[in-house]
Length: 209
Ligand code: GTP
Ligand code: MG
Image 1 (cartoon, protein in one colour):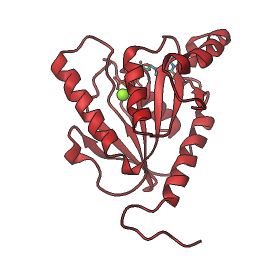
Image 2 (cartoon, protein in one colour):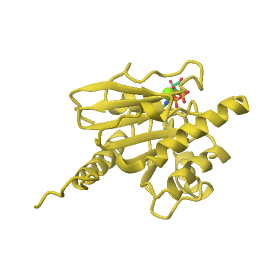
Image 3 (cartoon, helix red, strand yellow):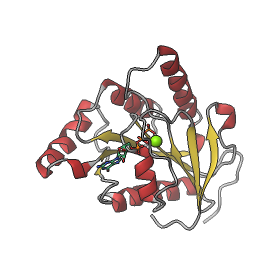
Image 4 (tube, rainbow, N blue to C red):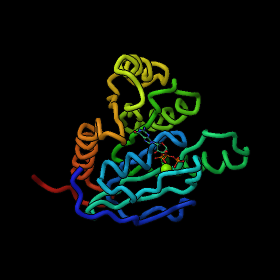
């Protein structure tokens, strides 16, 4: 994706710290260690922008990256890599719920699933958060450099079924190591941003063509 400027504009651990402006947002979600931060870095061609975890599950806040001062790419915290205390799980779930409940400016979700592993119950819960709120999203199968082409074909068929996704949900196979799938994903994101921009924000008068 061609971006001239990227800024980590907001880091939020509570809903009060979410950005209050009406710029469209595209969020990246998935289990801890699935490759969210790596994908964001690769997408925007900034290797050190989003912090890639050495210790999985470290990111507890929502990171809002402002691209070209026009829209936010949002790195949502992961979960589910290691057994975590119930209290932490609850805090995480509450933060995610409140993010999705304020979905006014959310143009699209990008749900990541590791192509090497069958989607888990947690992946299903994440998909449900989006489906229930009618948030449009694409499924991204990450780390494709680690598996055979045969496995890729199998998972492209299998993952949407295991997750019980609505028919027609786009599936994109990516690798942050090789850059595979990034063009396709950029295309989906830019398309969602463009259609969100056309929709007038609450209180605004729609533009006449
Ligand atoms: P949390 O912030 O803990 O939720 O993790 P995350 O989803 O942001 O994952 P992150 O990008 O930090 O990547 C986790 C690990 O997977 C790192 O060691 C990355 O280098 C590795 N990784 C991510 N994407 C790929 C990929 O496409 N291919 C390969 N081979 N490794 C990857
Ligand atoms: Mg991360």
